[in-house]
Length: 330
Image 1 (cartoon, one colour):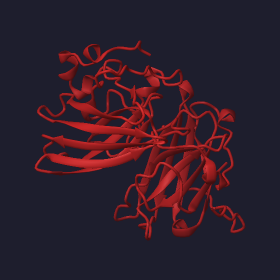
Image 2 (cartoon, rainbow, N blue to C red):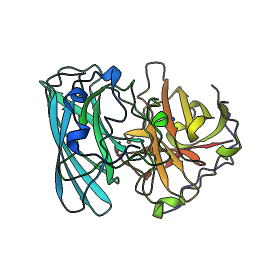
Image 3 (cartoon, rainbow, N blue to C red):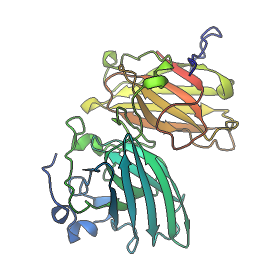
């Protein structure tokens, strides 16, 4: 694969302008939990991340949370090598404003989008792939999530399959951080550390992305980045801000003006690259409104990273493969 560099010769475009002990299914999914409303979910009781065994299909029951009584479904999860295939089948959803969106949540508390679920008479199906092997599944009316907590509108949540044990949250994913809720989808790499979709760098390490030096930024203060634009993003006005928060979380906001629909691609996708050249999918740009405005809001637990945007033909990709159309620098 040829190296993908953004030429800086054209000058700088100034921007204007996100553990509990192991427990069995019986302890995890009590009747009281199943009837808890979406506004009062218990972050610990609702933590159902498991490690899926390789080479075996696991049927995962999806239970309603109180947001949609009567909804239900199941997902068939098959892990093979570096890829996990998930097949979703749900019913009883009704008409959700904006539709329904399927996510995997890693053991580090970060969220990976698996796709939008098209429904007919309240039923829907979806097939998706991820590089994660430890995760739980949620169905939400939110089209963009970076974390799952009390404010999250969860319609269905995976139960713990028989024979599997809950994987406690990773040390970096404290309850407070997991509860943070922005509006996109962070993910991490090496089979995932920031959302369920980034993997090892390999060939993709040829994207030339400078690190931002996040640890040198003042916590709680926004830093505006500069943007070098190319390809379909040339002529777009952008504003990008990063803000370190407590708990090792960094918030990223990207705002677009005069954004045109990408040609021959599905979405503009924002990526973080770690010092070890692994990638984290942070989210994708909304479809621009009539004024050409769109946004990406994300959070990540990476201690330092670089940021760039690619034009991707596969909206569900968990690794950057398309051309780099924006490099975000200090």
